[in-house]
Length: 288
Ligand SMILES: C[S@@+](CC[C@H](N)C(=O)[O-])C[C@H]1O[C@@H](n2cnc3c(N)ncnc32)[C@H](O)[C@@H]1O
Image 1 (cartoon, rainbow, N blue to C red):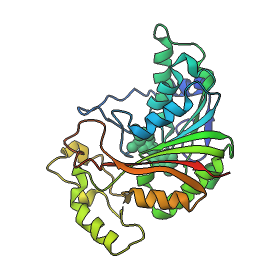
Image 2 (image 1 turned 180 degrees about the vertical axis):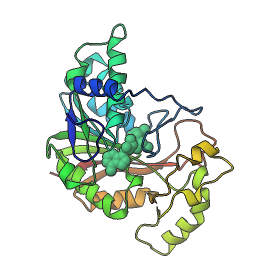
Image 3 (image 1 turned 45 degrees about the vertical axis):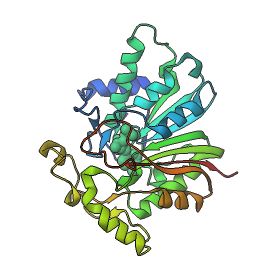
């Protein structure tokens, strides 16, 4: 087992991921005041509360014998919610992320749950941990085997070309009629509101990728973002998404779009909350 690298896809059992957590001396990160927890690789923060598409993903799994994948699942909070109920004993959950340290922390969180009184003992064998970059074809494992995929707050870290590749990969990974559940950030957030006029102008002009910016940090609103939060924001490209782009891109890649819409933030945040259009969600089915 290679631990600490990010070069290739690596799959870990629960026991291996737990051993890696100890070997790397990792700690479970603590949440900030608004309940969000920063990732270790500056790819945003783990959400404070599950929003609509994640709740729909959890509803979809309930009581079923299914194999599911979560892309960019970070510290495994959704996986833990999926594996906790007794009736979900037949779910196989593949938790995947770009940074394997996130996966090892997820295994530790799962072990804490298992050690709690009343938690079932079967959960560990239901969880698999996979380091993978969803944009890279060599990292795509288990094609045609997944009943559902959740990809929450990951797509905005991609370039337009990587977004196209990713949607093709999601299609390949799903079984026919498999479902994908997506959450992403729109430009309608307080923290980056200075980008809104530019985004709306680009949209009006019919630009292909109106939400794509080459440097995220240059748009940050310092009035609502603390200096330590700004230091966590990358100077890399960022892709604010919306229901039109997500809907049309998934539809063009073999999906039947069930829902694609802007939605409000589901937790309190003075830094993010703007006008009820902060998130975009998409739920779609792979055409057979
Ligand atoms: C903002 S966090 C979201 C975590 C969680 N899904 C949520 O909604 O709270 C983004 C996560 O996506 C992962 N990620 C970013 N780019 C990725 C890629 N190309 N392939 C797989 N995971 C990626 C990051 O490592 C990080 O853990």
